[in-house]
Length: 280
Ligand code: SAM
Image (cartoon, rainbow, N blue to C red; front, side, top):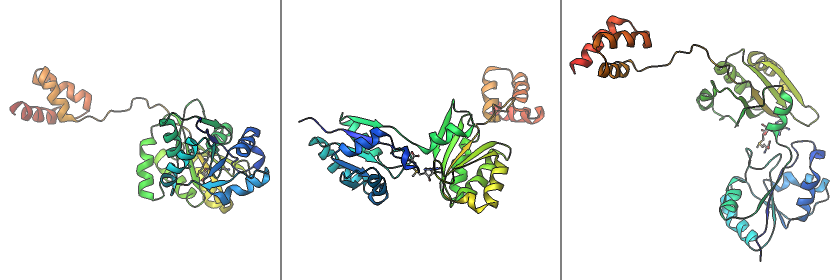
């Protein structure tokens, strides 16, 4: 008997009419739907008259469900993986199952559709030739700042997911770290009744969202323009290591002169340091 197929099916991110015809047909025809939250997906299935059995597959039972889902596929059953909204695996469950099926050489068929990050990018008006999807920032302020820091010099457009509870705090940290004049877009409630795009610099965006509680409601994609290429940026150098390297190749006076030019440090300070290194 041939193995069953795993379909990875994207569902709408708000507007139920966005579900693709192939998505609907796939959910009708598979033997089982593995859904992030069966209660959440029921209205979608009802809307399209789909009565395929569902089983919950969420981040807390993913590992436990794995063996039984793989056994169903082995027995020739087909499974559709869906999440609450958008594309499974994109800040959503499903990765362990897809990886396990891929490792076993099983057939995985994507049924594409909405994803909030692509939806937001397509209308934000920021460069899309290169972007970095970073997902949800950590919830705690200290962890969030440490997590954002390495992205500060990133030249690609940055794309984040955020909830209404933390959108103001995240925008505050982004303005502080990326600079108040960096351009950004806050895309809220995409494809829904209150869909909003706020565009501007990070200070303006932070002020607008903080001052208007309506702008803090719903689901958010935050997009930030990539960093401008830096011109004449100084490189951090370990002066002692630099001196030691130069001293290994050059006479002391020349090594000191070169180290002063590279590091910007004073010659007499470097001279003393060089004497110590040479003495060692
Ligand atoms: N898998 C989904 C996808 O492909 O977009 C994302 C799931 S993730 C758990 C949920 C987050 O996606 C929300 O907190 C929000 O940041 C973003 N999101 C989902 N739907 C959205 C919408 N309609 N408008 C804006 N952001 C949305």
